[in-house]
Image 1 (cartoon, rainbow, N blue to C red):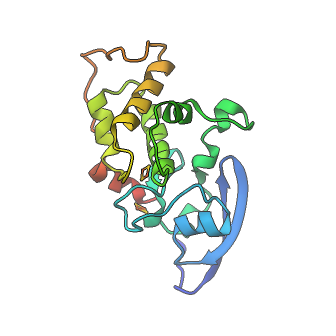
Image 2 (cartoon, rainbow, N blue to C red; image 1 turned 120 degrees about the horizontal axis):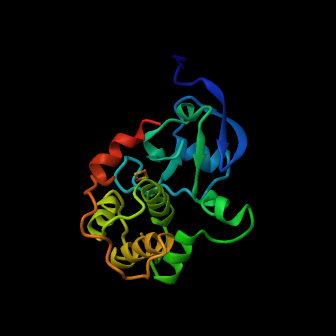
Length: 196
Ligand code: FES
Ligand code: FES
């Protein structure tokens, strides 16, 4: 394992939203700061900076992860997906919103938008692993995120609507009652995902 002194300046290479990127930073630089200040990916927001609010969530090798609890050096060689890349697969690199973002827009699931990038990234990760969640499971997943102004009702609606649309189910239809329970990735579970 590589070791660093605290003032070492290091070069980091990673894949950001499908593109090879590199930059330099001090070895103690947080991944959130590296993404924002070195790579210009300012869609990732920083709120509490100690792992509570979820605003800084991105996907690291496909898994939701809090960038304020990770060092940039830990992301060396990894694939990072931020909100700027969320529409990448669906829109094939064109301008446009993903279905999840469209659902947020349609349902007024944001106000100031400060928390939204993080919530979108967690929701994208969650729906990839749990395509047919119950409302309670979505609420549990969202418990790892603090939104100060929207209230969660419309956020839950947007996530549920996206899941329903992907499954070809009419919006508002109830998911099957016999689906197995899911632990969700709320506050406690999400804190396990930060060791990117
Ligand atoms: Fe709040 Fe990272 S900034 S969890
Ligand atoms: Fe303002 Fe969530 S939309 S904090």
